[in-house]
Figure (cartoon, rainbow, N blue to C red):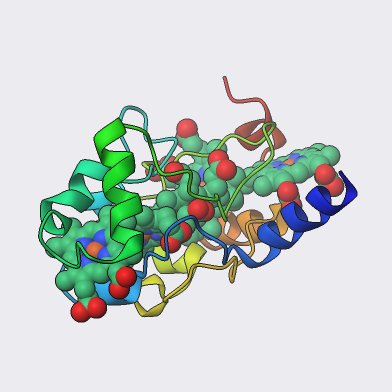
Length: 150
Ligand code: HEC
Ligand code: HEC
Ligand code: HEC
Ligand code: HEC
Ligand code: HEC
């Protein structure tokens, strides 16, 4: 149990141990756009991860001999989501919507993703970081905005 906790802690710190070694750098070089994969449905609370069928549009043919792609194809066949490890995660008591923040560049909160092989938590999503940007943009910093939205 202790070992499990320690390794989960390590995962949370590095974000490196994804079930499939997907690289943003490799894929964004091909001209794919963020919102093709991170669609922000509904109220846009979540950016969301792409459907495996999206990946398979290319990978039915591309690199299909790779064991990583075979694993991906297996998830797609079972219609089961790849269990990606979430790197940026707020506690439940904080309200946040991607759609409302879509005016901001993804890089402001997540760094230069298109240049990254592996996503790590390189930018803070702390209360201080949220508030600093709200001050900059003259957006509200009332406690209720983020903790008890109407
Ligand atoms: C203002 C800061 C901010 C901006 C701008 C932002 N994000 Fe996020 N992102 C966050 C925070 C905070 C979380 C954690 C959310 C949570 O745990 O509820 C997150 C989580 C995520 C996640 C994982 C969880 C989920 O929502 O599905 C993805 C994927 C993501 N962001 C992609 C993007 C993309 C793509 C863009 C640009 C279109 C973007 N983000 C812009 C702050 C931001
Ligand atoms: C537009 C086509 C396209 C889409 C969509 C796409 N990929 Fe790829 N992917 C490629 C190409 C091309 C390569 C090979 C790059 C190279 O090594 O030459 C690749 C390489 C990979 C590799 C490395 C395979 C290996 O063993 O070398 C992984 C893993 C991967 N993709 C996962 C994904 C996942 C997961 C998704 C969906 C989120 C996805 N890809 C969506 C085209 C695509
Ligand atoms: C081909 C599909 C695809 C495209 C295009 C794509 N992503 Fe992703 N993204 C993924 C997948 C799959 C993951 C989960 C694996 C990982 O973390 O690398 C992910 C994870 C992320 C995360 C980490 C979320 C978390 O907390 O777990 C962020 C941030 C992110 N993407 C931002 C972006 C941005 C910004 C762009 C455009 C510059 C972009 N993505 C384009 C497929 C994509
Ligand atoms: C890039 C600058 C920036 C960052 C970083 C940022 N925000 Fe914001 N946020 C804004 C702006 C600007 C608005 C006002 C948007 C509007 O009214 O159209 C806003 C509005 C909001 C709202 C109000 C939404 C609504 O329903 O009106 C909430 C809640 C919020 N932000 C939460 C957060 C949290 C939580 C974080 C940190 C994880 C964060 N923000 C980080 C710029 C930012
Ligand atoms: C712009 C969004 C935003 C506003 C406004 C905001 N908070 Fe927060 N708050 C956060 C985020 C994000 C976290 C989680 C920080 C983390 O996990 O590092 C947080 C965490 C907290 C925590 C838990 C601290 C901890 O150490 O776990 C308390 C208590 C708190 N906020 C109180 C307040 C009070 C009081 C106000 C008004 C003066 C306020 N917050 C205004 C975003 C906000």
